[in-house]
Length: 218
Image (cartoon, rainbow, N blue to C red; front, side, top):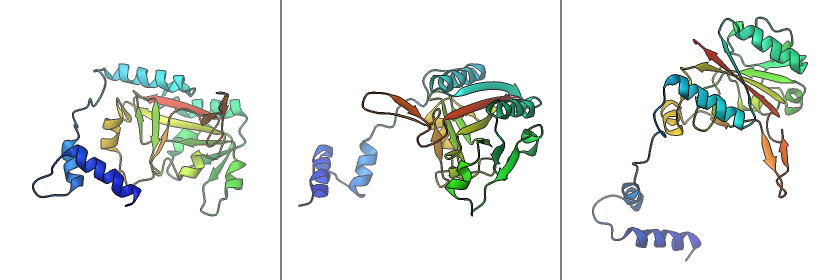
């Protein structure tokens, strides 16, 4: 008897006798209580956005708030402050977002290697959705976000979130609006890890700096 058989046998005994049509997978599905909370408390739109900003900052992301008119100038200032000479731009990024920025724009190509992408200081993208309760940004590979690798290799990521259209309270609400067949990347703050002594190191498997721009009136 394999380990798999042992585990499945324990599950069957825990569930008790199964009568009627269907598989044990169906019985498990019926036995699990799905009455969990979809969100923790009720919030106004303003409170939801404030919670998102608070949790993003708690994860050490840098949060900015602006409107659509000021957005190009904010992106220009953020790139200038980093001294970025080259910036990665997804193919479907709205052109007005970069209309005031000076750095050379680099477009992701299939032939681009990780070494090529590592030469780029910054990347600017949109997002698919943002989750207020967890301070999480979700990318799904849409044209304004590009392929997953362009947000993992450069050291600096500027991510634009349209408020309130792209903000939800909870993960269950986010899942309802996401396509599970797309390449989803869930980001909670800049890339970071800790060793056994809890020394935090940032930028190990993603950008060292994440700047999230909440654009109101979008």
